[in-house]
Length: 178
Image (tube, rainbow, N blue to C red; front, side, top):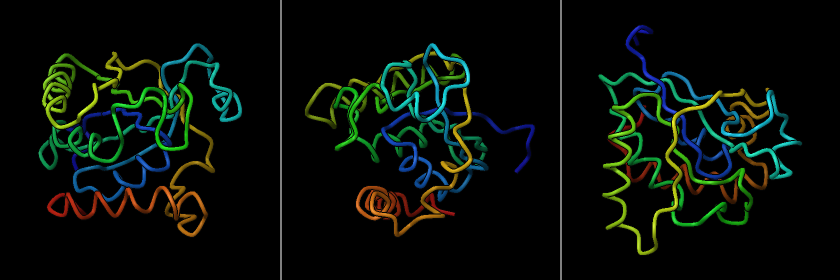
């Protein structure tokens, strides 16, 4: 991939281990980093995030080649692998750090996200509560959070929560897999 043509997408859809694991398998994604965005504390730690008082969300920052995968396709995957209708919750994970959020990086991404979110209102029975905001400062999560599912596929949470999301994405987006 040509580094000069890569674009950035920043998304939060619950636990970043799930979102990271799915997007690491998608063609056109050159890197996936887990981190934190949207809060008041500079350089937050995971322990601070877990309190739910920092304002940060667990997110992934993707670098992608728009010649291989569109931003709209990335958002379609994003809306398939999490529930955008549950406020500050994904499954058993609850708190503002698990909110559904799209942080756009330019006006084009904002416009595409608005269109996709509008399309999603006809797919989901309940209202979409996904936050849509300009991308704030991204803080890289601790090293032990990076590539978590790849390193710990047998870990309990990974087996019960992450693996089914990966399997669903692999089934639904077979044409987008590496």
